[in-house]
Image (cartoon, rainbow, N blue to C red; front, side):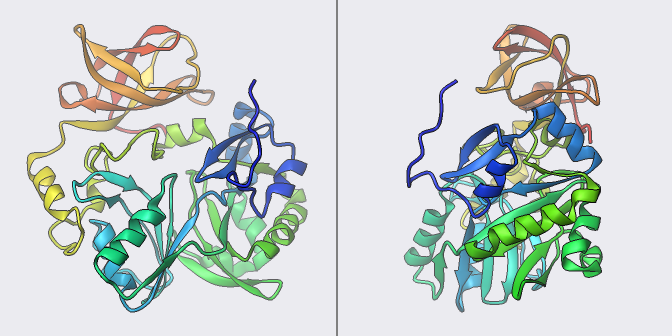
Length: 367
């Protein structure tokens, strides 16, 4: 297996020492940072995530900060989701689109103040797009990447672990809300959110120097809860229908194709640069859309490239993510399917890297 050569272009994180001490076995590169992908094995990590609690180094979810009088105006220009009712202390999952309505990112927006926002981004150079928007429109706003590194605490025992470190007030945080809580004299934004359906939190660690003290405190407090270092799990995210930007969608796709139409308030989100294009999509409807796909037969390998979906001798879509699910004893997958075959129960074939296998399209995900 080839190794990743370290360099200053590939950044370590404030938690890398803890990740390495915990026996990380594999990484991927995400926003030019190291993202752990395996600790014990993908399946062992999967079962543990569903049963206990894990600490995730997700520093690669870099923040784009908007600060200044025009910060809220710029935020609305970036997304077709209407943010006018969003309150300080709230997080929102938002599609960010270009002038054609194509997806540039699907981040979480964090409203710190009326004139200060963080955009917690997926893997893309969104900072450059936002800077260009601010400059081109001559907005009174500072756009930069702050020293903020998210740390995830995910799993059914996440509340107990977080309460042991931050106090019982964390139990009162509502979904997609955050509170500023103290750790060693530092105020940190603690949100009930995360890239799994098992429940948990994301801690926005502002200041790299506090990273390992927080990691160690969580590890120590979690000993009785069977805490382990973990990472976003490919099996669990597919079961849950959590999309991966760059894998399941790109800037060639609109939010409606990605099943994110409910986050597009195209009539009221005035100012969004892609609004006119998305208004047309909303009227005409997409011709393809993300679906859950069950692949029958042998266990499939990881999907490292799109697998064609075929029916009656022609391609009707592609699988973008796939894995064997131990809990559901089947291959679970996500894919973009043409409208002719996206109905519940449609039978199609998948041309995997190991051969052709039968598949069924579903309109709901497993978790």
